[in-house]
Length: 474
Ligand SMILES: [Zn+2]
Image (cartoon, rainbow, N blue to C red; front, side):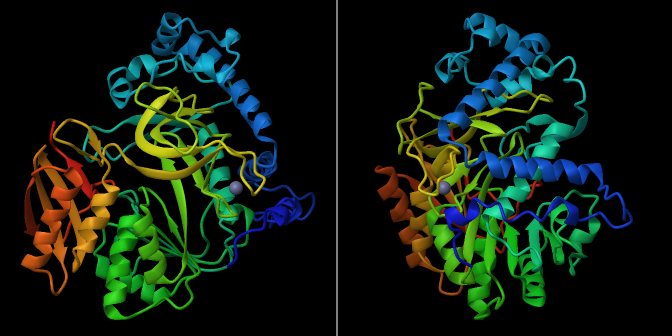
């Protein structure tokens, strides 16, 4: 499983010829595949071509998309029409991203409070509404967005691109341990659900192997038993779940002998967790950054140089606290604009994540914009006694270093009082509790009251997410 070589990639050799598309059986002549398959195929082909365009060309194409989006919301969404008027912006005069940045940031609260004024009066002709999507709302009230036939089609194409970049062998076996809707009861059985393909969109384009799925809310022992029984080449799940399953695998001295790659989704992947998952499972980790609101945001550069943004789907800005773009290499808030998301337009949406942008061109030759790291969620950060934000990644490492911890969750009740909930392993005692308390004094740089609570299990949120840091302090 080597890293893709950029030069070889230019041949876009990953897609089969159109005449070999899946779903052709039954149509001998002429070969007419299912229209949905054609859409995915054509879109994937476009994406795989786009990524080799020069950076400037990709950026000017995004500006064209932005102009179309602004023209749409000017006419369709009173909320944005008002905002544009008050900051003196109109679609026809949009010349650059600097013009665009006059738009104020859109907050989660705006989306919740002004949903009726953000929702367009009608959709562009030919675009259909599909599902309404909702964030899990584990620590705050959920955000709802309307997906459409266009966002759904691009979601499929981005998914295929992610697997192509990850250089998977689609004929192998895949196990997905993630959140599934309540109606999918087979994913909540001890055996999990076996499917003869990887499911759409991969099964539309490639002849795939079989897959197994299980809801991440199932008991970790049951999930581990599924992995050991199926011994897959690929596993897809949330970093926190893989961290826990990896600890359990190591405790048993077992290994998954065929495993080639682990796909992490749904949560930020801190470097120490990435290294641990890699070491314990002895497999490469492939990370995807996405959100319910806009879908695919970025995934790893196939040549290993950070992350590439899905520029066709979303405009990503990394900005400082005053909303100005951060210099290359510095961290800031992630601000998203959905370029095709006309069901619920999201313009300069402060999604609550932090990342590090990179301006330099990628050595792999792709012209897509770049992030070096996705460093954490604002929602999952703690607050310092002086009111500043405390990134939790260093604390996370320090707590793990205390030793004999299978899983933990930090709840900050007040600015100077935290509770650390621990699922202990053998050997966890007063010494470990002392080291945890010391880590907080060190990282906060001032006295903090730390209590440790031992439990058997830490539950996930109804949406399947696991929160390692929860801030209840104001
Ligand atoms: Zn690259």
